[in-house]
Image (cartoon, rainbow, N blue to C red; front, side, top):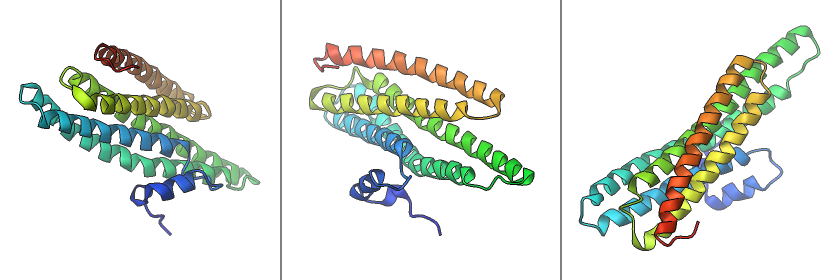
Length: 213
């Protein structure tokens, strides 16, 4: 029976399940939720800024709002994708491995599941980086009370990226396909570099505007 989308549940229900004994949802889904919240806060920030501003920055803020909404929808889908990937790994690990055939099938399914469990957090991280990129692009146009919302979006996006890259690293490290694992590690390293650059840029901007890091 197909499980109802976690995205369609109430926040209270999601949090109760997150803290329950059930293996899902878990950390990856929580990180995706943080990324979705970051995108939503970016949309709020840009909407409020564009509404109250009449200069040329309003155009970039309006575009930022649309991009944030698109990213939010993408990350929301990744919440369920992460649960599905985690479930596939769990099911593969539970498969029998008595005969040679069973061992081979288990290994095949586990390898495929681990690849998926690496790609999903990488997608969450990429979306989180896109949120940070939006923050950098409009940092000079945002002012007033919504600066706090911008800062919150940045912190949540950073957490989503850092945690997701860690999960991707863990899952790739357990794979037998070392070529894929090496390629995944290279992508992780590149994303970490982009994260450091974006975080440093936006942090300096927020501090200059009187918003503590």
